[in-house]
Image (tube, rainbow, N blue to C red; front, side):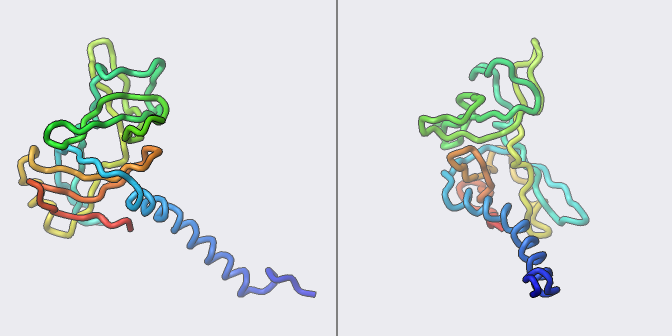
Length: 184
């Protein structure tokens, strides 16, 4: 009696299903953040490079990438550690760092999960945090237009899940949507 996996069609089907699963998991994760995450608006400093293999994109430098240590720093924090940056909107609706935690908040506050890029020295009063929000792909030719906008006008709206995962939703300038990011 032959087993099911003895058939070459079954083996090829199983291999195809495994590949689709490996491709689909990251997409499903991103889609979950887009659908169920809370929106947060971040101030940016855009720069426009061009990559011959990937096309135009805008490098995003969220202002909350540099967190002032006056918000409080968990003890024993070193480069590479996971942290959660609690954000609160200011009077203009821009979310700013309000606290730095070593575990996700349990009180309902919105916090972006990131990793410490560098720790402060005695003379440095900021920490660099990497959130994975470093590039926004744009249609060819539009990156230069965005780069020319004054940096204080460009904002990034992101979705933030309850556990701190974040994904870009759209680039905005003066309340007008410049570009939307799809979940895929």
